[in-house]
Image 1 (cartoon, rainbow, N blue to C red):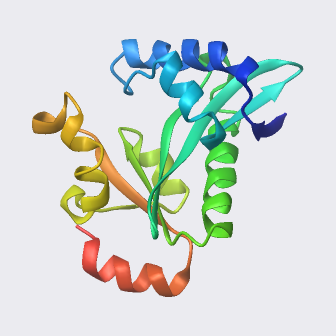
Image 2 (image 1 turned 60 degrees about the horizontal axis):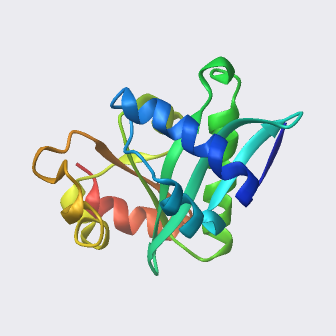
Length: 164
């Protein structure tokens, strides 16, 4: 299996995979246009030319990025693909000097295993006022905010300020 930067040839299978989970209410949908506009943020996991998973790393502020649209094909779940995608993206964030990586998720157990900590959404104003305010779920959001800290010192300081 290979994890690599997404290309324009990946957009159609990425969109189908994301839409599959969006229709089940497990993630927000992404249009083709959105995927093309943010393609440089996405990675894909492939094996023998088959797209098995995808996710994007979206920078929100100097110290905060978000993992978006994490999806692993149903037939490939439980094989560590999601974990490898998240580890790839958190490493990219660390290399960019970003201290915190956010995920808004229903999969809290998965992210907890990857050292993400639950935080209050209100502690993430750069996310809320940039993206969440425009979301149809804004007033009744049931996703859990979880943050991974790429730097130990930042983790201790931020954890004290943000943890539920």
